[in-house]
Figure 1 (cartoon, rainbow, N blue to C red):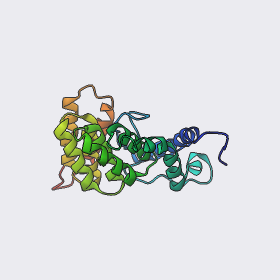
Figure 2: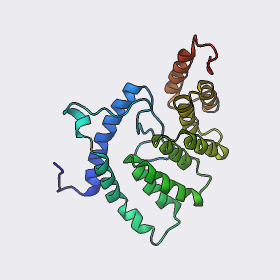
Figure 3: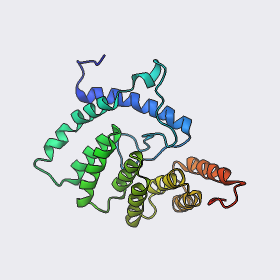
Figure 4: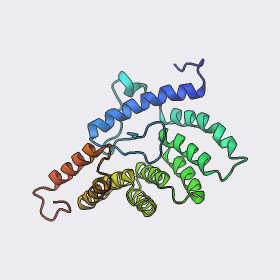
Length: 222
């Protein structure tokens, strides 16, 4: 039962923590996750598994407590309301639009997040972090080509952006079966960012790609 004594923001914070716990579990099982471009509540946001949906659960634990998509949207609407009101006086504020986009991204309302990110990028087209998040949101809607297009455009503004290169490699590998392309992106990432915080994850993914392609004549990665 929802605790009506809490404000919408407090409810959002509590339930978002539950959602992230479920998502982290799925990501752990799947063996991969995306990295956020923008600086939100967490720098690394295991927003959703690349390989498998969040498990439904068996009636107990975090999975069974996760809010429904409708509830997530309701909470996002409540949290975003003050920023949406602010748009009445600042309709072209990139910062406000990005803030709203981040709220809906975190609530897994990806089409809405894409809309706000796109509006923000009209004012700040060179914001590679926002383009990275929009590209990732496109991936979660099932549009790998649009995701890659946004990542590539982000790289025209920030060629060494590690999070963009990380996510681009994931989409090439899992969305386009392009292991060689993924390896090239990750090699570029590590060469340009030798102290990258998630270097061990990148190296593990590279090893997985090479292992997957081993013994397959004509494979793109070898």
